Structures are given as structure tokens and as C-alpha cells.
Image 1 (cartoon, rainbow over the protein chains, first blue to last red):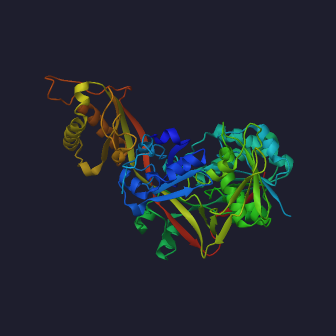
Image 2: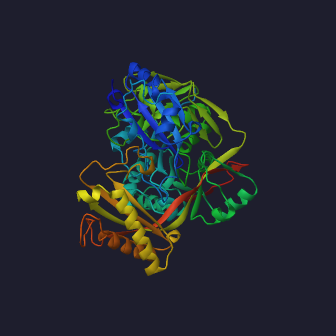
Image 3: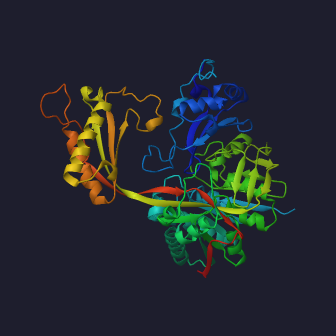
Length: 109
Length: 454
């Protein structure tokens, strides 16, 4: 088993415009990238579950050249508005950090 | 073969760069550009007219960019002036440019591009069906448009090209697509748009496409008809095919498609090759022109005035019932506000942020429990004016401070305030309120270009 942070070289989230959030999960070698790309981390259902969204709102991209997975989703409200908790959207990736990427029971579909 | 050498002074004007890096990059360069804006820090800057970087920091960067450009006789393009790129932001940055020209005895034709739009103009376009919603856009009405505090359009490269054609050497633009600054000159020289936009996307964050960006710094790329080669001018930095490819992910919802005013750049089949241990060659970037030329609109609308209370809670008996305590204190505060100020709960907004429980993620926190020995709380109050927000906050903190719990018999003081007064005025509160594109018949159909001699 391995937690995501032990395998990835960078896990980050950020606004992509004030209206969307995007998460980048980046690796420094092909083997680790493929391990993640073949796991629940590459499924839209995982993020729909974590962020209380419909799968139709989640876009998951595999970017083998960048050795990265990317996940984009709508913001709950435009950045910096009245109900904001994270203006830059920089901490929304946090629930992913300790996930065991080799656990087949996690976010099983 | 036509080549164009493009230089990014730094990723954001005011964040700094090494003078040696820019000077090295400027050798043989065709232009220097620098983005000065972002919506990342929120709607405050667009709404209020304020700038994130201090005038000193912007002066420091421009006072080093301008003489290098003048020395080499090449253009400088700065976009999204003053964080939000509205009229006050352009005017304030233009004043800094004029000050530097005077201080250093520099002379150049100077253009500004005003991309702020009057609400009436946007309302007319909305009525004419020329506003199209982007993803996750709010419902628009004429009233909402007319109620905005400021609207800006994100210029494409064309107004920059026009300013250069009119003879400007230094161009300072209002809100602009980050890439437009870097596309203008290559486009004028006949570089294909796929190459120009892909290089622009990599350049616009300065040294951020390096393997490890130790600090903000300059970046350079040489573009030709088949691709571009990017290499950091600073010998302490290096690019790899992966670091350059990975940069297309940054602050973009789609890592392969970059939607711009005149079309879409597609990097899904781009090829990234190491030229050396520091330089990367990128080829096979595609570009598809759009049927209709569109510019993205950004707007901020005033929603009220904020006062916040910051406090710590340490008593274990309070911590074990924090949710209930906040709910019952809020109930008590709501009643007192009604009695004292005559305001209903719907006349203002009050929320609690509980750090140590769910402060950072709010309703999306998957584990909203208190596991530590203390929490930090913020009581956030937004009301119709500052005086009202202050009045509500005084009731909120004082009422909560002495709000009882059943385990203790007698008056308690439940909140540890680090500041006196416990409330802090945070001023006007804005929200982003338009996420639409405006259709234009002519790319120069918006943006007022003014050229002066400095």
C-alpha cells in the first residue's frame, strides 16, 4: 500500500478562472503515473463522491507527457464571494493526500 | 525562416526578477512582455479599483524592464494592468510608467488600451443576444448588469498589434488574456497561431515552467513556423520536456485545449523534446480559428460591507459541543439584532468559520470534527453598510462571549480575542457576477487605444 503523497511529487488544487477548480496530481516517473492512472484516481466517480458533485460535472484528464492527472470541476460559488472559504482554491485537494492508491475497495464502482 | 524571440520579464508584474536574467534574455529579443493581472486574489481588486502589488513593487520591476527594452529598441507589452485591468488600474500603472520615463530620461511612444466597458454597453449587448454564458455562469439580467461595480473585457492580441502598428514601443493594456501579450508580435511576424499560443501559454508565467522555480524570474523562447524552443536565461534554472508539458496544466481546466478570443489552441498532440539539459523544443501545436470572435467579460458587484471577529476557543467543554454552541449563540444573536437594530436575519449575512474543524473547506470538508485542543473562529458579518455590519458584530461577539453552556453555572467568557477591538472592519465586499463572452464583429471592436509620447 502507499498513500498518494508518498507516490506523487505534487498534489495541488487551484482556481481555473473564478468559476472552476482544478486539481493536478503529478508524478516524476512513468511507473508511478501509470499506477495512479489505473487507480480510482482516474475515475470521475471518485471526485463526485468526495466533492458532492454529479459525475457529469467532473472532468478527469490523463496527461502522460506531463506524467500528470488533472481533475476539473465547477466551484461551489465564484471565487472570493460571500460564502468563500478558500479564495485561491488552494486547499481543496487535501482529502486526496492520505488515500491509499493501491486499495481496490476505495471508491469502488 | 522567420524567427521571433519572445521574453517574459516575470510571471506577474511586481513579483520581481533578476536584472541579469532579463538583460541576458533581451539579447536578440524581439519583445518583452509581462502580465500584471489575475482574478486569483478574488473580486476585490476589480470591484474596488485596488491593486495587489504595491506601487513600489511595480515601479521596481518596470524601472528595470523599460531601460532594457529602450536600449535594445524593442517593444514592451504589459497586460491586465494593476491586477484587475480596469480603468483606474491602467491609469495608476500608466502614471508609474511616466514617472520612470521622467526619472531615467527615457523617451518612447506609449500606448494604453482601455478595456473597461460601461454597464450600458454590456446591457445593450445582452439585449441583442451577443453575450454567451461560459461554464458555470450565473443567470444574467439587465438589472444585474447595470448593478455591477465594474466590467472589463479580456482583450486578445489584436489591440496590442494595433497599438504597435500605431507606433507604440511600450503598450500597457487593461484586462487581457494572459497569452495575448505574447501572441501579438509573433502573429504580426507570421508565426502560426498554434505555435504562438502554445509558446505564450508557457511564457506567461515567467520561469514557472522550469523544473524548479526557485524564485520569480524571466523566461525566453524562440518561435519559428514549426515550433518554439524555450530556455530560461538564468543559468540556475532549467526546463525539461516534462516541466514544459506540465505547465499547460497550470490554472487551466483543460490541459490540452486553450480557448482564446479568436480560436482554440490544441496541445494534445504536441511533441516536447530536450534540446539540451536546459532547453526544450515544442512542435505540433494546433490551432483552430473560432467561427465568432469573442472576448471574455469579468465583472464585480458590490454585495455589502464586512466586519469580522477573530477568536480562539480552548475550553474542552466548549469544544465538545462547538456546533450546538454556535447554533444556540447564533439564535441568541439573531434575536438581539432584531430587538436592538430592528433587522431580520435576512437583512444581513452572518457565518462562522471554525478553523480546526472545517474552516478551509466549509461544507466540502469530509471530516468536520474537532480533533485538537483548540479551534480558531471567525464570525463573518456582511450587511448593507459598514456601520450596520459593525453594529451587528458588536452584538455578535459580546452575546457569544457570555453565552452559557449547561455544564457551568454562572457567567462565562467563551471567546479568546487576540485584538481590541475584537471586530475588524473589512470594508466593501464584491462578488464576481458575469462569466460570459461578448461576441465582436471586429477584434478591435472594444478597447480604446491611446498613444502618447513620453
